[in-house]
Length: 502
Image 1: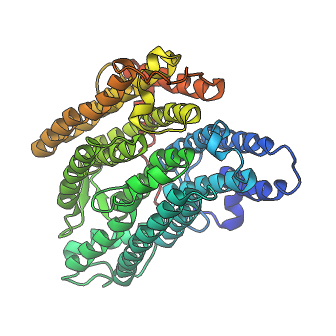
Image 2 (image 1 turned 90 degrees about the vertical axis):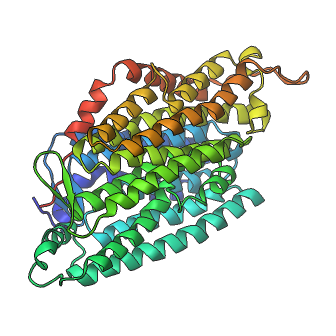
Image 3 (image 1 turned 180 degrees about the vertical axis):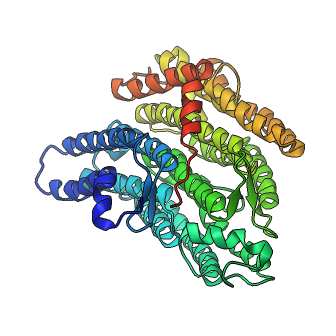
């Protein structure tokens, strides 16, 4: 089905609820005296939105708003993940001391706004819609990064984020304009038809012989925009400073939500839009436009730089930022396979990454609330000074991020490496394996600090708060469960590999 604006409204209830929530929170801040109520309302809204998305699973698929966005298995999968990311960020914010007095109505409205923008990034089937969604997410993210008043570190991070984002956005917009000039359309479905005709000189004369180099340049420029969103080298330079300077719940949302939305937008553009499906689980790049080789190199460089740079980090936010860059490289392994196996492995790994990374940031939030510090020193002796449960959870998250069994991170990497090896991409597999070994060092540093290092004599006893402790417990259990019973998530990812193109 291809519905107009009015017909599309019943199928856009999650987005509509988010939009109403944004406006409502801005207005309610003017009249509500108990400001904590605004955060609780935002939590209810994100939970309700996630439930509405889940209710759409297995239902009718089609194009909405005149072909601007898609309602299909792929978009529903990512909107579920992004809804959970928004829920996690709101939950963390309610338990964050640094966000307690920071205009809660505006703050939670901005969190819902980012979630709304990420929904449209995952479902856009038109280049203009994709660009507007990415820009909307970026602009709100700049504000959230520097949201804490009087924080010079936050203001500096927001400025750097803005500068890098502006350059990447401009490059992507120029690349999209080249594609529009060559194909005559902004719709992915039409672009796909034109790309399929490259070998024979184009469709209806839209693409002339010799246009492949221009299309390749356009794809590289588009990659700059989405590569910046997923923190892929060389578009990663904003990540450590922004992760360190932003409020911790915002850092967690950028780490798990923004990355997932960027990958969703990247997959929908580089697969159904500019590649052809052979009907047998494989995807073929347009003739003369071999973007796969470029991204193989990008994957290897991204994971290597992220892991090597993380080795010497003492600030845990920066360490997790470089870890996030490395994991973007791992996810790109599935992307470059050009097969359904790789996409399925990517989607499964994103779920796993959400669980273990959000868990690590929540433990860091608990330590930050207690000590006011976010470095590894703050974790010294955590297991022996009242923090046995957070330390045990952090141990689970670190070992899972490193890819060790029997945790979910191991299963995620297993699927990624299996997809790469099945395509006989041996160099990429070896580089990924070596990087996984390297990452053990900096994850083990945190574990050693919690269990083997003696705390300072004046170190206070750790008092775990129930609010954040509940989230940490749920995420730790999920990391363990999906390490031994992962099939339901893989099956969900498999069912979600459907792109509705009209």
